[in-house]
Amino acid sequence: MTFQQLRAAHRAAPFRPFNIHMADGRSLHVRHPDFLFIAPSGRTAFVFQEDDDYSVVDLLLMTELKFGQPAASPSQSSSPTER
Image (cartoon, rainbow, N blue to C red; front, side, top):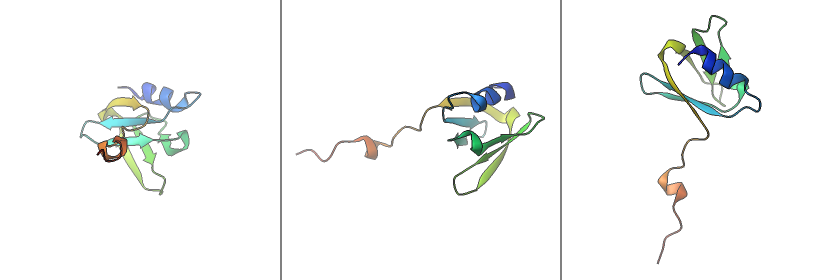
């Protein structure tokens, strides 16, 4: 992955929410362009959450960008109890 790919996803119009997958297995959800700040050097990014918590990530450790919402858990997608 490159910081140019992240920057393109960040600036896309219309914006599509995405997850940043990291080499250590973490996944960071970017729900809106205001929730991501990429340092001018392209080496570091701040990913904010709705509660103002944030993560500082080294973009050299980014492995994948995955677009769309996270998959629903099986309990959310299953139908009511069948009889």
